[in-house]
Image (cartoon, rainbow, N blue to C red):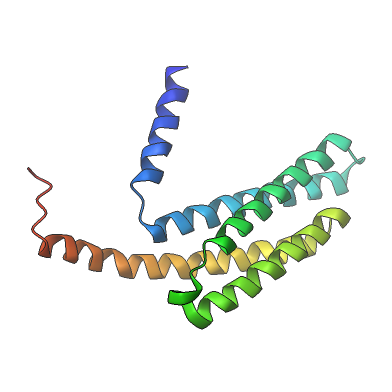
Length: 149
């Protein structure tokens, strides 16, 4: 019980202290994890007799990824993001549509395509966040923030 509480506290702190770029990467990571789970279940269901409980788990995993894509979509800033935000919005809408249809038909290839594209976006955000981290640290240092006390 204490171990579970410690993990929960760690996750909460990690989220509260993360930069905006890190939060976006965490969302992508969770979407990828959910889609990987769905793909594994689709594969195992195709290899044996169809198990209704697996179908429900596949559905839940894909729905979780869709919810994350929706969260990414509504968090776009069209004023600051301009053309990039508009393009991401279109991509996210397409992801949602493909995941909906892939979930209904249990289409491995359709879900895998979206999973791979989400991973590509995640990697791009990782590069962006890595480049922004030193800039943010320099700004804090310039403001005279002393974390040593």
